Structures are given as structure tokens and as C-alpha cells.
Length: 283
Image (cartoon, rainbow, N blue to C red; front, side):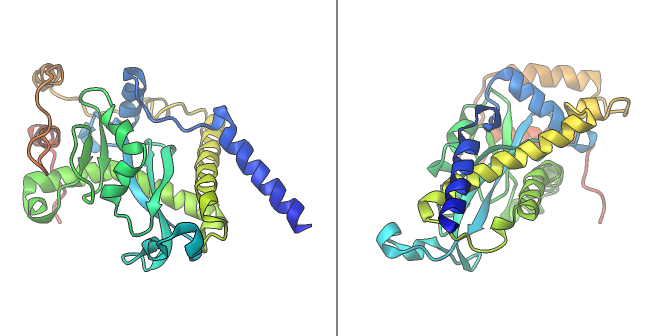
């Protein structure tokens, strides 16, 4: 009977979301950040970026038009950019495309910049240890640990354009995670037909099962980290004189955030690429 079927479905979703072994984990301790940063370093050409622990972005999950007596402002769920009714989901992932965080942040009309502070992800990023960062796209604001790509006239500057190129090599992982999630879970292929208050539960369950599938594949392949999977592959080595300078800078608890739109951390990361002679390939 349909009632029994849906009762079993929601009982399963509740069990998935209550399972501690499937809980998402955003890196917070120095040890966790070091491990995540090392994995991202292995997918960063020329070791261009060595302090990224996470990449994040927003995702629009389609929903049917919610009833006014439940949500009040029905129009707030319509995204003019996506041209559909949806909810704004904020997510972050590691170098293996496993979600470290995923949650519904608000209605579809909410932009990513505001959505970040409406959910816990913004606070988690702010609590990262010194010098470790999360990379976002250009829609987000700079923070001490939140590093967006350069945009507008800045990206025409070769110094900034180089940063965008190498940072995008890491940021693509969250787009890959969204692509894997969408292809695997058919419930995302059309507007979700569940009560609006249950959309959060479905999204959380999808994120947890997404990670479970990837972890099972990695375990079957015997992979614990990129340093393990790429054993024997020659890596770029930073010159000793540069390394000593960087280690000294990383120990300085100086001001990392300037006026709105200016991040000294991002500038230092871009300068490091320049010092290492790393440039975007010629078009």
C-alpha cells in the first residue's frame, strides 16, 4: 500500500540522518585540516595551492511550488536566475568530492552570498585554523578563511587571472560533487514532491549516501588519500629558500583581511604562484 511504502521511505531517511557513522564532517582541527590540504595539494598543478581544506558553492534543488499557508512568501522560492522554484543548498566538499557539509540554506531567491551566513557553513569556515582556507566562486565575499575567485576588472589583471586559474582547478571538485550527486539520485531530476519542511531531510540523506558510495569505492581501491593513490608520482618541490620564507610567513598572526573585497590571504596565495613561476597556459 502507498501509505506503508512512504512510511518505510521516511523511516529509512530518518535512520540515515541519525547514523553517526554517516555524519558529515567539516575539518576543524589542525590534524584534519592538514590532511585535507594535503589531498588538495595533490590535485593542484605545481603545488600552486597548499592551504585549501575545502571548496564550496551553492546548488539549486528544484521543488514544486510550495503552498502559501505553509511558507507564506511563495515568490521567495522562485529563482529568477534558475527560472524555477527551488531551495538554495550550500555545500562544501573535499578533494575526493565527498561532502563535508550540505544543507538547505533558504528559498531559491536567496543568493549564495547571503545563503552562506544563513547556514552553519559560514561559521565553520570562520573557525578554520590560521592560514587554512575554503575556496568559493566569485559570488561570495572575502573573509579571513573564505577565499573567492577574483571577478570584474580584477580578473583582467594577469596576477589575479593566474590565481583564478589555479584556484579553479580545486574549486571544480564541488562542481564534480554536484554532478555525481545529480546523476546518481533520480529524486533530483525533477521538482521534488515532498513537504517543504522535509526537503532538508532528503538533501541531508542524499549527501550522506553520496559520501558512503565514494568511501566504499575508495576502500575497494585501497585509497586513503591522494598521497597514497599517487605514490611514486614525482611532485613539484618548492625551492628551499622560498619554503623557509613561506613557513615564516605562515607563523605570523598578522591582519589577513583588508577593506571589503580585499583578502591579504588571497593576495599572498597569488603572490606565491608568481614566485614559483606558475602561470595560466597561453591561450
